[in-house]
Image (cartoon, rainbow, N blue to C red; front, side, top):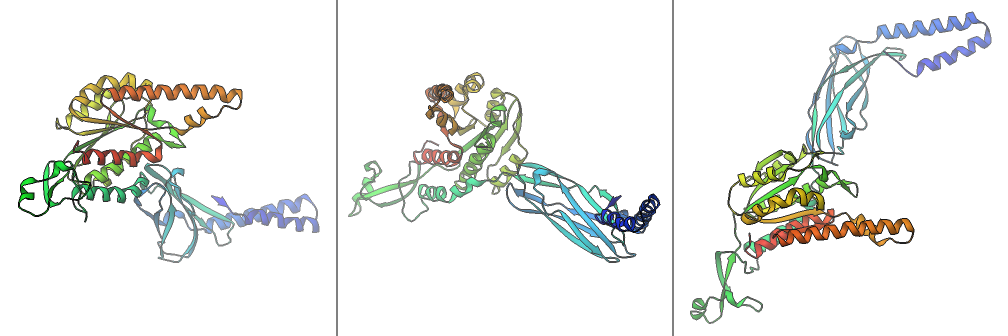
Length: 430
């Protein structure tokens, strides 16, 4: 049961009767009249159980993009009904304008749309559909909440896809598909063309040049069908936020961009994600919807408050095969976590694969290190300098072991990793 704002107004109207005829009996009589009217209105109101409610699942949408929750309400017949329908979702689904007033005639059926804008990844659930049926006087209503299960799968925003067109253009140059061909460092012969200034003299084909009036050079196509293995760290260090964005989300952006680029290049992409245990293992080789499948897998991944078991993650990488691959470790460059967990397993990975560690650098450390006006800022700057020095020392140790380190701000990580991949392909090292 629920009462409307008309009931307090009706009670205030009783003040007129009290002023005309002061006395306790007048007050009691007016309260009785109002109570009878509310009770009668409530009895006459149609039962909300008689209305059929159905919710259409909204499907999938990227975080920050618009979606709709569609609810169908049908009247069984009888007399007209005045309803208020509320489509409730968990707060992170971003439901707004979810209260719908409508009037249904006998046998009518209406479709209600509630706008959604998810604010975080994962399976976002609906709470239920509340139907409030009003009486003819609009004083009281009968209410019932219908459990109409539905979920919205919120995918990563993949904002780094804005970098994809420029990287694909570079890939076409490397792959020999652009109008101006360049000499790639692969091993697959592509074609012959005339020598131009700037060409490597080692690419000159002397036999072909002897049969022509001009000097001829060979062009090569970069290696195809190479392997790329992405290792996503979902342990406690990935829960840290840089500029209010979790490190894990920034790592996902880099992984999605590299997957889209490598899939277009014809390379095979494998993905491992985990912390103390492997959470996700994907083989995306030859999949046209590689990026879509990876987005769907990332939607349910969240940081775990646990240390990463790098032995298990390295074992999952080796389980994909012994063929040499580019292994991208998407994990924060946290000295204690790297030195205690990752370093012991790196020699095995480096021995069989080309390894790159991609980390999000917190610009707040540089800002703290540069601010030294007051005593508190001086102490904060000293702590920041110490943290930066430890990160540089850890990065130097990794470079000594043969691991290339990318330690850049969150917005720069996806294009930096993609550029590193293209650089390796251009040099024939992948």
